[in-house]
Image (cartoon, rainbow, N blue to C red; front, side):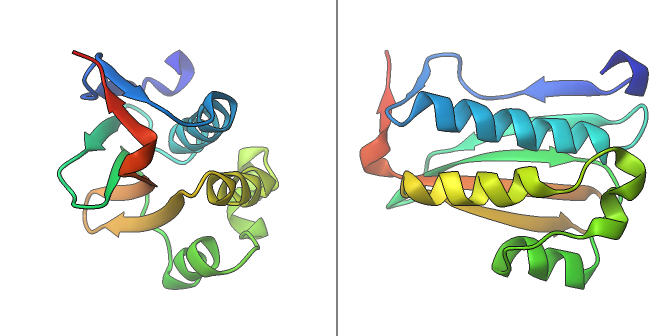
Length: 137
């Protein structure tokens, strides 16, 4: 991270506790944050947020201020079990991590969605049903 001079801003409440598969959640977050660093802007930032005001799901959002994704790459990430080989060639990765993350998230009844934040960067929304959420007071 120092090599990229990227700052991580975590706005998730430290008392937040997820009643879900710890290993899967940790693997997915590691992969998403790693990709956010890899494809982020040198000197940029990564933001972690928790959205818990939806009626049936809560979600974690990981955003960076890197280059926006093409509509084809967004489509592949969100709807196809494939990855963009060209985009990752210069970044030391084959893109298999995201495909694996999507599969693992589905196994614990979660969803994963990639979005461009126009003029800002890219966000990954990872959502879960409320039944998998527990707040610690």
